[in-house]
Image (cartoon, rainbow, N blue to C red; front, side):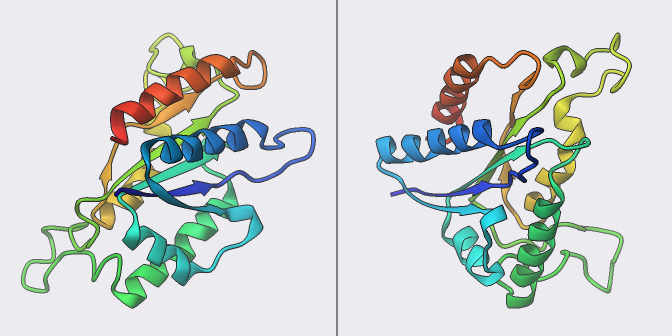
Length: 197
């Protein structure tokens, strides 16, 4: 039986970002797990967490599904705090990784290969105010052809550093100016059925 650890990294801002879409997507992940007969644990960062318990959730999980809005082209600051605390706890306990993978004999090679989470996978579900057309489009000013994946690439790197396989990310665009919730949910279910089976 597979186990999924679901993370809700939404940070509440009244009138700007109240978290309804992130909660809905998180619930979709929980429902998917129930339908598949998977077990799951869930952490809502804004409600608190214990870093050592989070490490144990990671160790138990076959999949990590991180749900987050994108604020100022990154995850909310509470997610960065969570990452620092949880991954440091995982390093300190030796449960997520032992070191950065290098040796003193040759410190220029193998950086990022000290993780212990091989065989486990993670994906991220993001929500953006930006339109989909801003991603991967050389004609759009802001990213100059780079993609939404490029903007949040660093989040996946944290997991790769610990040995996780990083699956494709799922992005919801234009969530404020032109929300298409039914379409997001339909496409997200396809994402789950493609990558979490």
